[in-house]
Image: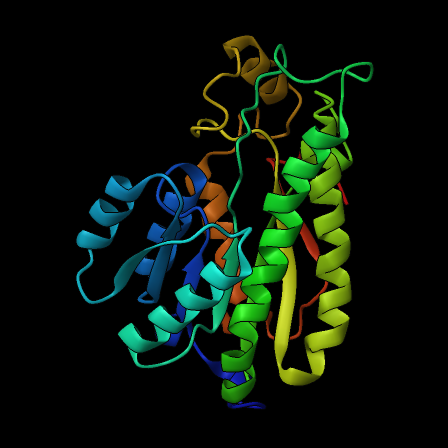
Length: 262
C-alpha cells in the first residue's frame, strides 16, 4: 500500500464506484469486477431496470441500481446525491461506460456519403456530454474527500479503424482529449483521469450483431490469437482505480490482446 499520501492510498474496497450503463454487457462486467474487489457500486442504467435491479440484488448493501440518463445533468446530479445518501459517503470513482443507441454492425453503419451530423451528435451526447455530467456531479464529493478516480471507456479504433464507425470513433476520440485535459485540470485535487480502450469484445450486447468471421479475422491479427473478453477488459480497468495507479493520469491503455500499440 502506498505510504506517501493518505488520500492516494484509498484501496478499491473503500471506494464508492459509479458505473454508467452498468446493467448489461461490458458495464455489468465492470460492476462485477469492482464488487469482487470489495467496492460499493452504483449500477447506473437507462432502460435496463430489471437487469440493474437483479445485479444489485445479488450484492445487498454493496450495490445500488439507479436509473438516470447520463445526457441529463440534473438526473446525473440526483444520482450522485442518491448514492451518497445510500452509502453515507460520496462517489469516489466514476467509470464512464454508457453507450447510447449503438450497435457494432458494420453492414448497418452510416458510410461517408450517408453520415449525418445527427449520427455524430447522438454519440457525442452520450459519450462526451455524459462523461462531463458524471464528472461534474461527482466532483464536489471527490474534492471533499481529496481523492477521485475517473476511468473512461475508449476504443482502439483510433489506431486501427478496421470498421470505420465514424460517429462512434469520433465521439471516443473527443473523450480521449477530454480525458487528458481533465487530468491536467483535476490533478491538483488528487483526481486522476484515464482511459481504457478495448477493441471488439467477444461478446457484449453491442457486439452481438458482429459476424463470426469478423471476430475470427481480428483474433488472427493479435499476438494472443483471440478476441479480448469483457471480463478481461473490466479487470484491466481496475488498475486505474487502484492505489497502484496513483501516479498515472491522462493515459490511454489499449486492452485488445496486442492488436494495436499506443
